[in-house]
Length: 243
Image (cartoon, rainbow, N blue to C red; front, top):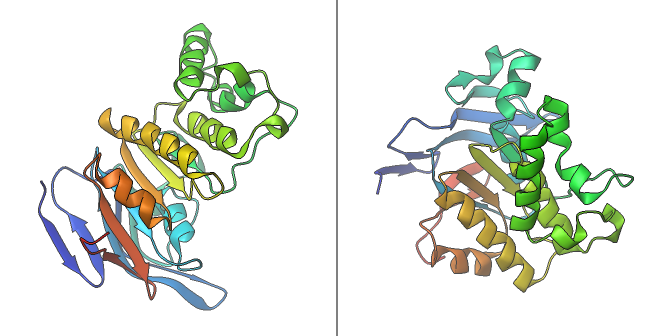
């Protein structure tokens, strides 16, 4: 187990070089500070939960972790590259190593489930026969083979979330960030989705999940070593062991 240095202002896990590294980061919007003095290092293969009340800044922090937002101050590095020094093209390339499951997953309704999942492949020019075989395997892995030809409006909430996860990992990313992935689905489907994320972690992926569901966190912590982080009063803390 890596050593942990913890204070009110920072969460630092010592070990391998972090894949995502935030140093004394703050983010302001509309004249108000949403996040303050955030330090977070995510090591390869680690599993973290991010908690906090609605409006505390969980989604903002997730966006900072993949370069969708630029920190007002402090430094954000992705795979040891400073985000501020990246061109738009460089950032787009490095984002291929980070799969994101958005809270409100959006699909192109005129395309099938399989076509929506494979969109990142087509955009990157990797839509070849080998990738098509990988796509079929991935769709089967998330349990959507019978729904591969369906259109997004025909999917249930759980099916949409599993399709979103498949799309997030189609490029074989090193990191998966999931923003409230179980917020709109029932307990049984939530557990199924979390099992898929645990499997990814066991294959060496770094996982960060934003959630408010403490019961789900407790269930997952019986299966995998996971640290629980909490945003409170604009800062990041290591949550207590009672979770």
